[in-house]
Image 1 (cartoon, helix red, strand yellow):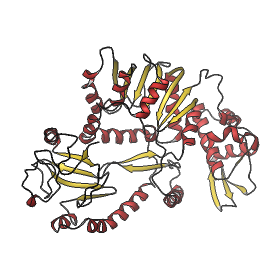
Image 2 (tube, helix red, strand yellow):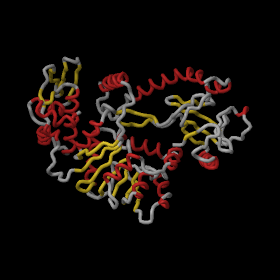
Image 3 (cartoon, one colour):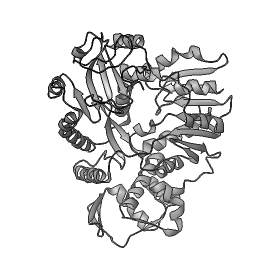
Image 4 (tube, helix red, strand yellow):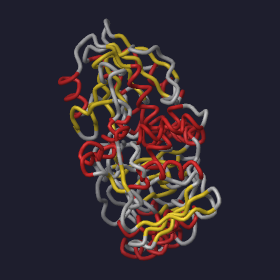
Amino acid sequence: MISLHRGGNPLPVSSTQLRRMLAERHSLWLWVGEEIDGCPGLGPGSGVEISDDGGASSGLAVVDHAGSATLENISNTRVSPIGWVRRIYRAPVCYHLGRFPWKHLLRLRASRRTWDWIALPYRVASRVGRLVDQCRTIPDAGTVEGHIIRTYASPAMVEVFSDTADQTLGAAERLLASRYLRPGDRLLDIGCGAGREAFGFVHHGLRVVAVDAVFELMCRARGQTGTLPENGELSFAAMSVCHLGFRPSTFDAIYITPDILRYLPGRRLRIEVLEQLRRLLRPQGLLLLGVNTSFPFTRVEQTAIRTARKAVGLFQRSHTPEDGDGWVRFGCDGPLVFTHHYHSEDEVTAELEAAGLSVCEHIPPFFVARALQNESARERPWHRLRCHLPRDVTAEAVEEELLLVNLAKGQVFRLNPTGKLVWEGAIAGHTAGEIVDELLRRREWPRPQVEGDVHELMAALLQNGLLEECAELRSETHATVT
């Protein structure tokens, strides 16, 4: 990202480049990379939107023609600015400098502390609104993908990614390339963006196929292929991670840029995508999966979100969010987009193992997983999961449904007819695989769908204390049912 510096410090982009970028889009977002004393609302990681000379003046000079950033009142400087501050984004508050109350604080030249005190109720309201957003129902994959494409196709995002395309691989990526990839290997780069990683892997000697769902970013990447070595092999294709049109056993390795997996709604869908990627790998092929394991909410906020979701689930049972699902907003005016927050490395490892991938190493934020050589000989550990009825759980049939009561926690759960069959099979001592086979004998459903439903339901029953895992199998299946 671009950093805005103060005074005579050099800018990462020249004033000529900045004027060209402003002329193309009439406005531009910059990110403040260091503390700037005396500037309202600015600090490390703050975003600043500037406009060209034709924009509405806010009274703050941004960059003069010599390339110096001043951020002073224009009446106190003799420079001829090329841009004006219009908005300051300091998460979660956006200061629109032409609106109340920020324009009055600007005219009064209020201190930094005054700005912070005035912004306090806005921060509280924004935090409350963010928690309310977490009570939405889970969207379908097509809706999420549409939001992501529109967000990353915006001119500001395209320019930000294009500015980083000529950078080299990061430290973790270089370590992955040197440790696991050999020159001549065929690599699939998913989420290539403007091509930074793809170009870096080509310079490493790999044959790269780069795909992305955002056509605008790939157009920028294609325009920079002139920097590749003469013998470099790089091709681009517009594809979604959910629909990859390649033959099985095509690639020696697959690289997924961090956070793409988090945009897939539902654990079942994420496992299906990972299974699809496993089939694209050659025997013993490697999956380099980028995932950030962090959670943006405190424990108190997590408890409030779970309670609210249970209340909403009483009226809206379908499309209920899973634990870790959430919604985040891109920037101050960006869309609200679904994302899944992984609590720990074990959760990522469990999904990889459920898809038939064996985790070799974790080099944050990347998980290195290897495809099993013989799929027919593979048996998922969760198929052997066997449970029994806990002491503090009672059940009562209500027509075709089943009410489960956890006496220790004072919680009541309702299971539909299919869930009732799964629970009854579990307390009868049947394994998860045997329950799947029994359901397939009663219903003409696709096996992957039944396996996913049984796996998720038994995991939820275990998590809520409605089933207990048999001690002799606990160590073997724990990673796949958390």
